[in-house]
Length: 443
Image (cartoon, rainbow, N blue to C red; front, side, top):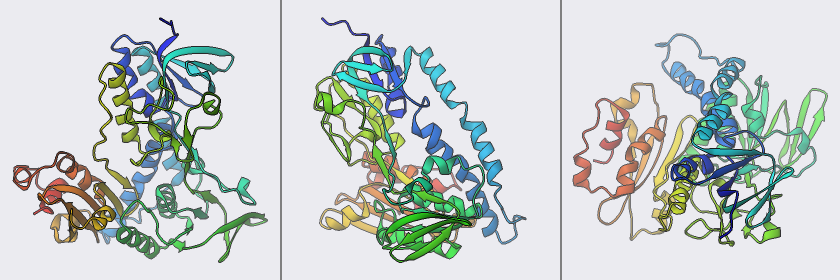
């Protein structure tokens, strides 16, 4: 039997690694993370945590301005103070995570990791071996290959902005683009969003994404649809973004055209791990084309949403697999939301899937503003689309509202576990609350 340095070695130290690793060390396995940047990866350092901290004042601002004077003030956001608060909360997370995991028995190897063979990894000037390797390298921002690309910024840059510029062009209309545009506008920037197509947030209902765009336009954000960005040029008074539908003067440009799996430079071609532009290809045990190598998190080619909770689920699944539970991965219903104002959130069968299979599903649409509780924090619009199967079980839901994420979270157990109408009636939730309202929509 070969003696390896580690039983399991992870390339990366984000949620796809650290949520499952302690379950392995608790069973006596020797585990290590290879990390070339900050411990914890994208989510705690340049993603979810930073975003929600910077976005929180936007939600407060909305309530202040919608209160029509009940709450005094105009809700102006001091972006510099907002950034300082963000840093005070998240700057200590890498050290805290490292300490917690080292206490659990995980070792850290810092540097670029590259496969020399299926069991051997080069980390800087050191070579280590492992019985099993998990590729958990995540993704990075896509960058448009156009003239002036060096003048554009990515989401990391946006989330680290010390001062909000007076104007901003956002290229793209996915999660990052829409959330960044919403935050920048709330903080005082004049924002223009360039959309390559005619629908933002393509993973959500077009009706709801169109309503969100209309709301953002009413608030003062300009959208240019079906527009191609051709170049960015430096001018004495800022930047000039040239498109096929005219030029835009601005002070700052965010390239939010998507994210790309981190598959380059880690030796996949040399050892024969199969991957494509969507990520690493795996079977129903998250096993790659090489038996002892697995993958988890955003680097995977998968139909499930590439989100932190998905990576956590996969990490914990692999821990169970390596501890002897050989069942195939069975993904649950995964809830997702875009943190704009209003939010859109969904879980389970989508509206598009239900419309494509009308014999299998019943679609029920409701205006949630019929519930008085929606007026407590000055909501002005909202709708929910409920998807039922032929047994009248709730199998999917999509909502647009200021509390969409909370509603979908409340309904998630019903969607995942197939509650019947009789079972739903037995849920006596807190009144008054958004959860109570959410289940009221099912009646």
